[in-house]
Image 1 (cartoon, rainbow, N blue to C red):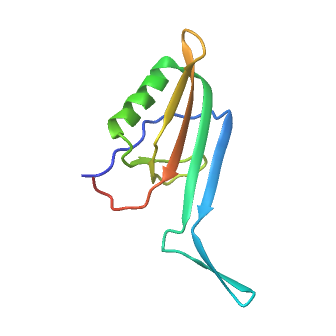
Image 2 (cartoon, rainbow, N blue to C red; image 1 turned 60 degrees about the vertical axis):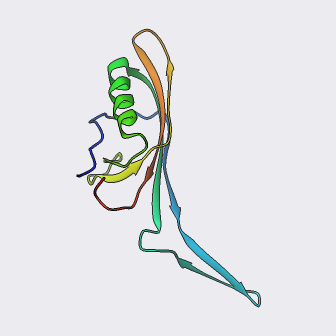
Length: 117
């Protein structure tokens, strides 16, 4: 079974953005330091998205999708990229802005694993 694809929601991002974490190992001996990459997937993207003024239906669509995943991976195409990557999320925050719109905050962390669930 293949992981589902994130709903087609265009994030008009107010704050946050892309962060890249590099997995490295560092050793020190006699005053000299040496670094090397760890593993084959040593570069991990983290996207912190904060959007305001989203319609209630858009927020519900995203919240329902993420609730249905329960923290399991899904495909998402980050802004200004064309290839979907696997991501997970451990949180979603929604706050009311007014009767017809809400603000939303979510953090997506790139996930490396087999394409099956």
